[in-house]
Amino acid sequence: MENPRSISEMINQTKRIEENNSNNMEHLTSMEILLTSNDYARSKDENLSKTFYKLQEKVEDINTLTKKLLSDLEDKTDDHESIH
Image 1 (cartoon, helix red, strand yellow):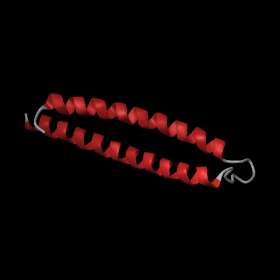
Image 2 (cartoon, rainbow, N blue to C red; image 1 turned 45 degrees about the horizontal axis):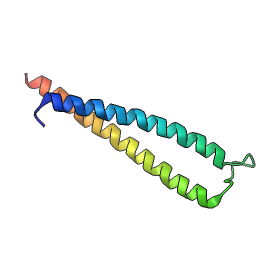
Image 3 (tube, rainbow, N blue to C red; image 1 turned 180 degrees about the vertical axis):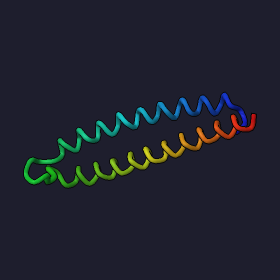
């Protein structure tokens, strides 16, 4: 991608996604507390827990990919700046 403005805008949008990812993780943490009983941290509902943990895993994957994308985009801006 050659256009620095496009890269810059993509970085801004990716940062917004990253902020949203943070909010999603906070919500998942709250939900995890609600799904867990006080008795040795056992699940209150096995079926819900299975689905919840799948969701949590996917959100973590999205967080990882978002960070990777942001890093790659920032590398592009560094490369572009070093050329000039």
